[in-house]
Length: 263
Image: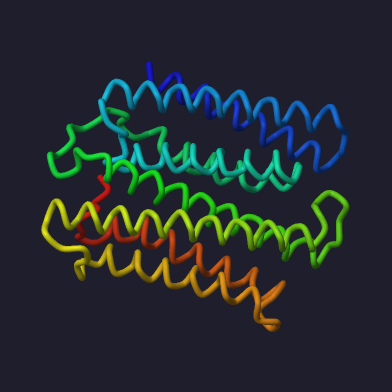
C-alpha cells in the first residue's frame, strides 16, 4: 500500500517536472500554475504518507536508507515551497524538483518497512537532531540548485530564469538557513550523545565529516562578504559544498563503518 502511495507521489512530482519543463520551453501562466498545482498535490500526499509512517512507527522513521531518502526528498520539497512562495522562482523549481525525483526514484525499489528503534535513539533529541540535519541538507541542496542556475543564467542571460541578483540572494539565503539548521542539528546531536554515551563529541568518521560540513558552510556565510568570492566564486563554492554534504550523507553511511549506518 505504501509503495502504491509513494508511486502516486512520484507520478505527481514527475508531472510537475514535465510541466515546468514545458513552461521553460513555452512560457505560459496556465502551464506554470498547473506545474505548481501538481507539485503542491505531490507535497501534500507525501506529507500525509510521512505522518502515517510516523504515527505507525511511533517515532520519526529515519533509521535506514529508504526512510532517509524519503524524508530528505520531503524536506527538499518543503524548502522549494518556501522559496517559491517567498520569491516566485517558478522555472527555477525545475532542477530542484528533479533532485526530489532522483531521491524518491532511488528509494522506490527499496523496502519501505520500518525497523524497530534501538533504545538509545528513543528520545526527542534524536528526532530534533534528524529534522534539523535533513532540513539543513535540503537548504544546501536548494543552494546547490540555485548556484547551478546562476552559472547557467550568467552564460545564457535567458528570461526564463530569475535575474542574477535574485539568484545570488536566494543562494546566500539558502546557505545561511541551512547553516543555522545544521548548527541546531550539531547541538542536539551533541546533547543526545552526552546523555546516551557520556560524551559530546567523538572522533567517529561521521562526526568528523559533519563538523567539516558545518565549518565549510560557516566559512561560506563569511565568504559572501569577500568581494572575490561573490557571484561566480560563491556559486562554485556552493556546488563544492554540496559534494561534501553528499559524501557525508551517502558516502560514509553506505561505504564506511560509522555510528550512522545506512542499510
